[in-house]
Image 1 (tube, rainbow, N blue to C red):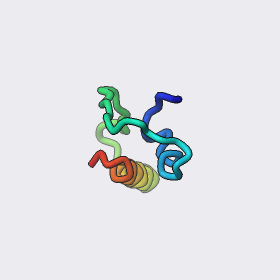
Image 2 (image 1 turned 30 degrees about the vertical axis):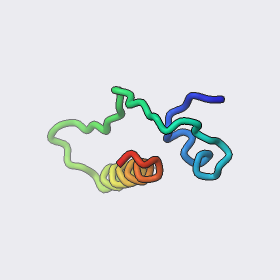
Image 3 (image 1 turned 60 degrees about the vertical axis):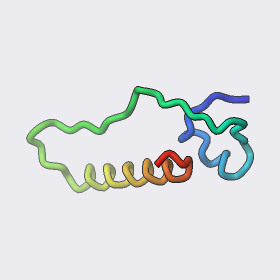
Length: 67
């Protein structure tokens, strides 16, 4: 038995190695943010990382049926 953030166990749930016995989900008010100094131009590296991160979050939400 485990309590975990969905993103940490997404692969185990998808493979069936871990089963969520209940469909209820609890939203946690904390979040992560990507911050850059005001006035700085966004470098290609930061832009690529941001795009990758947003893509991963969107995929996670779709898999977990959160979106």
